Each structure stands twice: as structure tokens, then as C-alpha cells.
Length: 245
Figure 1: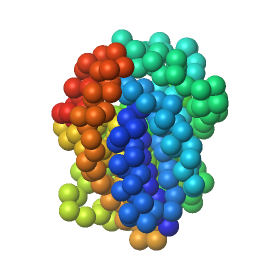
Figure 2: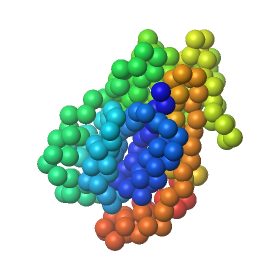
Figure 3: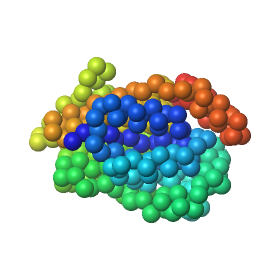
């Protein structure tokens, strides 16, 4: 089966729709959302509705999802992020807020792969996996799974348990050797990429071939940015969409 694995939609309906349409073209049979459906963007409610409407989906809790329904989670958010949280909190329906409240932190229903928003190491602490130190903690916590798909940093990268890190190939899939190695795979961000490429980012994983392919999907960034400005959200959130940082 092919899995569409995506994260950090952040209320960007235009990018979410583009990614889901692209995933359908790839013949995916399962959607795994790694969290942060809301925050930053102008369409939190619509994005939650869209994810919930997917026919076969598992959705996990991200730190923004947690913060929008629990004020105690907002202590470490900077001012711009808090504005996005407050905007989302005012617009979510009670049903969608309860949906976010009850999301699990971890997906472990597959024998070899798992999913989490931040790190398999204490997922509720929202630790970033940015280097080999963080990756090693993740490797220790992900057993018995051979690959952990994560988001949170908005930048795609692959950590391998031999101490190396690598980019996804630009022209094809990354063939994982799950029998011999373990991987922590950051799928990047659908709604607010921060790796210098403004195109939406997500991964298709084929559990028959163990191929993981990163796709970058163009979408109407100008429309999404304009909606942010019209909503009265901080202009930097619109500017980021246009530059991918």
C-alpha cells in the first residue's frame, strides 16, 4: 500500500488541497497526517474538516493542535505563533476542537513504520529532531519500528542510524533498507515550508517496495498569503509562504 505522509498544514487550505490531489494521482491508499493541522493560516476549520473527511486516515496531534485546545500548551509559543493560535481557537467549531483534543501523539499500527509530530522520544514534549543527538534519542524510542516519519521543523531530511543525514533525491524515490538500517524521516511541511523552497512538501511511502519519495507540490501561494493578510494575521506569515522560510 502507498501511504501519503504529511505534516504541518497550518491552516493553509490551498496547499492542503493541492497535496491531497497530488497524492490521489499517486494512487495512495492511506493518509497519515503528522499533526499541526491548524495555526498560522487563515483556514483552520476548513483544514480540519478536509482531513477528517479523508476516507482512510490517521491524524496525530501537533503542538499547535494541542495549544489551540489547551492554554497550558501555549507557554513556549512566540507572539506570532500565538496570534495564529488565538485566531484558530476563535474559529474552530466545538466538534473540530474536540477532534483535535482527542488526537493521539503516535501512530504505531504498522509493523515497520511509525509516525509522530515531533520525536518518538517523549512526543508530548515537542522536541525537535535537528541533529544526530536528537536523532539518536528518536532511534532509542522508536523500537521495534524501523522508520519513524516526523514533521515539526518544516524542513525535510533523513537521519540514518549509522550517524549520517541526507537529503531526499530530487529525481526519484529514496530506497530504504529497513532490514539493515533504521531511519528518522522528516517529511517537511504542507502549509509553511521553511527549507527555502516554498512548494508544499510531503512523502509517499510504498510499504511493498520500501520506497519513500518526497514530492514538492506547487499551489496558489499568492491566494493563501492574501487570505492571511485579509484575516488580520501577522504579515510575516504571508511573506513566509512566498519564500519558503
